[in-house]
Amino acid sequence: MNQPGLGIKNDTIIALATSFGVGAIAVIRLSGPTSIDLVSDFFKPRGKDKSLQTVASHTVHLGHIMDSDRIIDESLVTVFKTPHSYTGENVVEISCHGSAYIQQEILQLFLQNGARHAEAGEFTLRAFLNGKMDLSQAEAVADVIASDSQSSHSIAMQQMRGGFSNEIAALRAELLDFASLIELELDFSEEDVEFADRTAFQELINKITNVIKRLIDSFALGNVLKNGIPVAIVGEPNVGKSTLLNALLNEEKAIVSDIAGTTRDAIEDEIALQGVTYRFIDTAGIRDTKDVIENIGIKKTFENIEKAQLVLHLIDASREFDLTGLSKEAQELQEKYPKKKILTLINKSDTLNESQQLEVQANQPNWILISAKHKTGLDNLLEHLVQLVNTGSLSNQQTVVSNSRHFEALNKAFIALSEVQKGMDQNISSDLMAIDIRQALYHLGEITGEITTDDLLGNIFANFCIGK
Image 1 (spheres, rainbow, N blue to C red):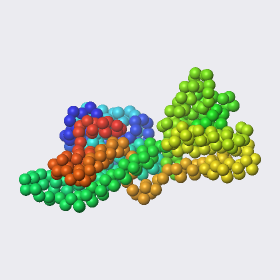
Image 2 (cartoon, one colour):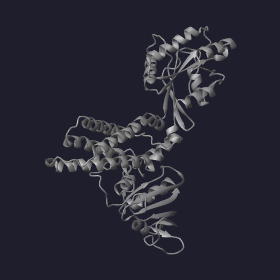
Image 3 (cartoon, helix red, strand yellow):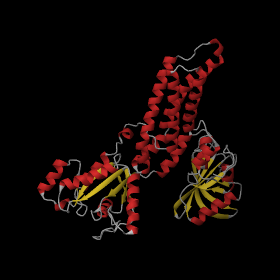
Image 4 (spheres, rainbow, N blue to C red):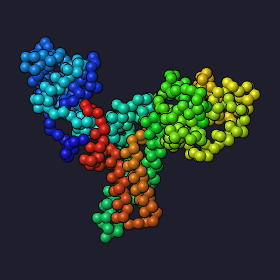
């Protein structure tokens, strides 16, 4: 963000709030002390001759945007008066026809008459600086815009409504009350008095630590729900990996061939299951080969396994059936990646007779029999995928952390509180304990924006789209 000192600006900014391009309508947004006056100078309302300065807030007006005697467009103008607006300033939104020419004409008209083009995220930055939302809520605005599944949308909406920040603010307020008493003790250190009840303080530290630990643990779920769950499809050449990807996506995404080693590079696409996005990655078949290009693909296969949250391991049932051999293959992959969730799929199960299928189910109940070619067993596979992601905390309206900056700040606060706990166990002096308490308060304040720097704000809002 190209702004020196990200304090509250007194100028008026303008930007296109809708995506650039031709459409039915476009929305141009202005915010700042002169925004209503500026638009009023170039807006001629239909019907009664009224000025935008005198109309009520949150009202919509039909008229023409004029450049001298030239009509640029017939538009709807919505007025929001300070402080009851998104940014807390006077805001005007112009809904014009979606011609790219009209959009540029209106933008240039106001840019040439005193408005400045908004930086990325500057409207939301102003909302934060004017106290309309805290920093975690502001970040959630970008997450809502970027959400592409029910789960990522639910997390972002919960955060934007203030669920997460309210929880952090409550913890910080309780800790701050005790911190004030500890600091007061330092002023009376020569009298050797204790204003803070150490037993109550111990209980508070335990309570806050447990809540922060729960929030930290929720990041594992929140991160994958926000960004999608990467699922690597792996196995030897010609076991049906590409056929399975095509069957799951219901389209011919990957090339299918009887020739071994057809897939040289990872092919990726995604589907949504019960509001959760799964990113499937079809990888090169794993085998020993002298083909240099194929070896590069196999190397990428192992890299994708490392990155994946879940691995679908395909085994070819059409080979000479030997359950011991199949079990050994599955076991070797699990031993190589002991911390990975690996789901073993017996593909081409239609080549097995009934007794062989029963043998698999009896000896390996967690394996799934499928036929990617004939699309059988896929419903069972999809049910297993859904069960592997516990979204109960979302359904129960529990706070789920999905922002890596918040995760890092919570970890630092947790470490500082652990030091406070250790200090209390060792009965250290109040001045040393106060240092760690201040650190915990600092890191909790970073989340909601009570503690900020220009660099931090610049990095956050630079990732926003212009116009928001």
